[in-house]
Image (cartoon, rainbow, N blue to C red; front, side, top):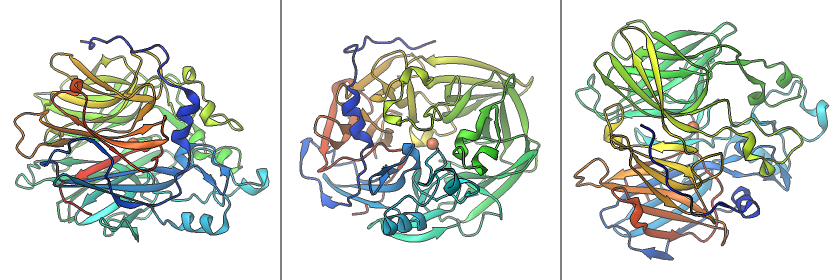
Length: 495
Ligand SMILES: [Fe+2]
């Protein structure tokens, strides 16, 4: 069933000039207790919300070509018995330090940023800057800032000081390309019910790729690793798990690096859809050395998944799917802030039902509205679940910036929407369970919201049971936080 849509508040959901403020660099670093608060912070909400995202969109006034090429900045928002502390720091990567010192762009960006100096300055210059801007997680006593193609950086979870590169205690082999996304199995049946962190790396080859999955216990100790050879080019950003399987969606893409080597394009712009090829879904057993099963479905593109669960011979995988890759729409020589949203396909929520007995896949659209950055209750990761929270566009059709947070009841199709439009723009929501939770949606939804009318950001707290009642609290920061990517919650209070 496709969820029932509500009417938009207004046909014009945002002002582009104000929206552009979300992409202004935030070069400053702060450390303070938040005092400008509307509403009441729930006293039972204790822990730290870490967020990561690009925050420098220019180097000394020279603008980057794509926001995803920006240096990573991590925010720590610590909730401590009704008080909230804010701290942000740039990840001091080697590239960040060198560019800040030289005050000019020294590296090409994956998404198309070029060094000044034209073709001669960029041809055969393939050294990428690790920008550590995509995700952040606290696991095994380490806070790690992560990017999709290089080592992680370890930070002090209290001060966010950069402590250095981290290779996950040497679990990666030479040539492995790290990936930022992971899943936490809340109740691993191979570890006596203890949680475990499931992550993956990919080694790229000419004709095939090798995918290796690592499972680490809560101390960070490696419990299991297993690898499979995947034919073709494997463009995979995320994974989902169930108690028995890891599932990957292999987008039908090819990668021709020659324009990148010649200095003509960023590496990501060398990705091209593979015509007339299906999307392949890789189902990898987490136990023993059983073979990987590969299922096929119609072509499409996926960055992020919501969740997966098993029922008998079937695995249900819920994902945000696009007709085609959505991020490489910024043509060379153009400003991404002038992008025509009509040229970008909307991300939409789909359910893929995998039948392992006959290797078939059924797909069903669950929501038409443009959406991204899904979140679920952490105890339901890999298990049957009922509620998903996502960033969504204000209008029910078409592609637009995320300005609202939706809660979708997958059992009834009921939708609740909390909207920040027309002046607000929302980042990824995070669901934090109430410590005495009495249901799957009993908890809080936390999100950073950019208030373009004041050019400042708010930390917004919503009641996970009822988004319609409005925000429980809005915590006004003293400054703006640019468009961000991913974050995570830990019940440990770092302030
Ligand atoms: Fe991602």
